[in-house]
Length: 180
Image (cartoon, rainbow, N blue to C red; front, side, top):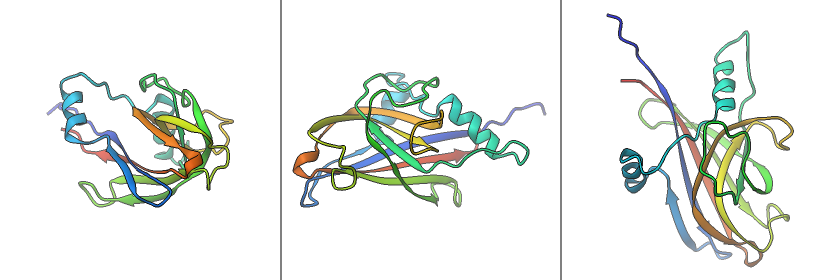
């Protein structure tokens, strides 16, 4: 049989926006049924794993090539939709945060990489005023010196009042899935 079997890498972004007392203001999940429906109807394009990320992941699979693991997350206010050619966030806010990375199970044991990071003025003093956060990315370097993005995703604006003590915790998941 000459059938090609494909596999894929699927990303998902979740966040929880809290006020200074820890009260949840808003939750978001890019894999909600509404977002899945919009993608199925081709009303929302989903190209969030970027080309440089694909190349680095392919290199990580090979001893002879290698690559660098991803440890950093950044947020921004850019509104251009994510495309495969992206190499950085459109408008990064604050500094890249070192994440807590783990493997979790979605469909098969340990099939998903998960990064978690919190952004607040208490953690990053450069976050000040009010920002409409609309984008997130995962990177392998802290400073943005190299082209190191794995994925970028955009979403509806989440208004963050950093000066009043708002915080936002992001969870990004990238799952390896079996082809059909």
